[in-house]
Length: 95
Image (cartoon, rainbow, N blue to C red; front, side, top):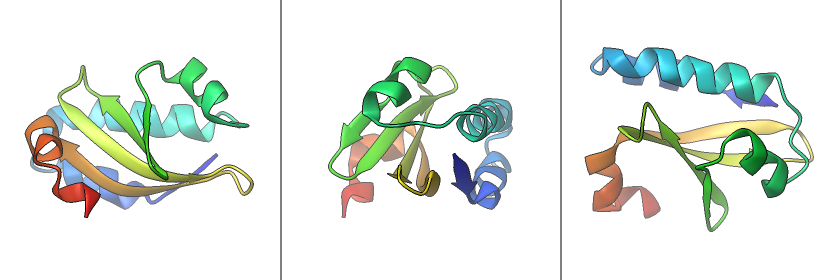
């Protein structure tokens, strides 16, 4: 699956340096697999949740949340948000 775009991960890591390693590990895991659906995604990322059309990944021991839109047919992952757990809990990303 191709991740669009790594720049969001790098930009988020600037103020949160401890997120850099886990975010890049997530990207590498996404890019090294083909996911046929949610079950396949859940096998790779046990804590992934689906919220409407978006997928929410726990990153860095649940300190951060990555929210992405996945297009399975084209094997594309569009990163919508990378948030701290506190930012995620506010729910502004749902708007």
